[in-house]
Length: 510
Image (cartoon, rainbow, N blue to C red; front, side, top):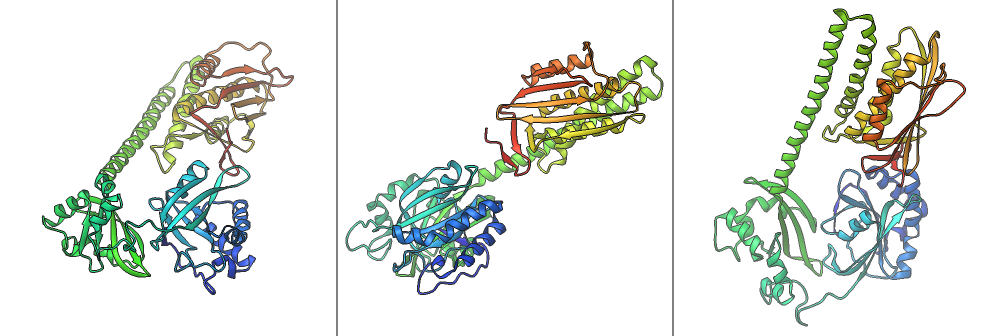
């Protein structure tokens, strides 16, 4: 495994035995809990599962004769952290020091992140640890009761390192050049095809090998053609920061002369003595350029949302101005209905702009409904209405396009209740309820008003029918009831509609 220290957590070892061997159950579980709460988004139930597994880790290690680890993903990064470890009793440790509390990079541990993403077992033969030892690595996902991956269980067994010949004991340049060794081991051909730059220096930081990409980088940035056997830090002084790091594995991102580079340094060791240093350098200039373009795009999208919202407010202001200047009494209701429709559409963009990432145009339908309904009810000065919104623990997310349709539908249904349900009354109840399953969303709007014996076709009902049928691919109907009116909108869950559990903020499992 390859790591970098992430926090100053003190881990003791006694007689070379792993962390779980010397610690009692309480200490083991406390360490797992501390690391998980500090660096992950796992729930208390998830942490409890990991704690129980961590306490049994020593038994797994002794039974299998392998080195065992538990890794968990860190919440803001595409990295993981080691929360528990165990070594077989009586074995020589693969690692000089405990690795609990250290981070794991995807570039060095692809198996860990494969299991995280796919929820499947991964096996990597002849992986190289940070101590330069060869191991067979098996990674198994750890899942909670909802079948979500909350961590990975890693098993590592040391294997004999393949050697080009009996005399060669490690990756060294003492008896032959590094380039010869790479070629004889079959790695030279592969390294020549890599876009990444491979650079190898000896103990004195002299360049002993570089693949074509590496040679090109050194020549371009140093202005020298003959670079082999010369001090790399004299040719590329910006690498001093990387070489000064004492960690055996170190990853650093830097920008030099408009080039964005990720430098991975690996110290090659023989009997715990530092020999060569291998640099793997990736040019991410194009990637960073694309990121800047996306950021600019995000700014543009945010500005578009602002303009749409402002334009809608301008139209609404013009309508209000016209109403203040005088409109026929029979037209006033139509003006007010139009204003409500404009406000409903504007609410979608207000919700989007309130988010940190304005280029993400997903909208929470229930929050949108609360915003629209509350405003409309508050505007009814002469009518006291108890508004009840029942999400039933659901969180429904959809795109801005569908959100606009739903906003207009909610507006029409609430508007109809406020306008027709409570005639000759000064109070009433409007109930908005969301019922969902894995395939459909049901929006129920009901009131305790006078009801509709024979529903009449109107502009509002035509708007609802068209939006439900054409935009939501759903169904609109009235449910017969003795008191009041009960309207139901049913539309399917699809790529543009996602369901979550509001309490745990987890996907419903469709």
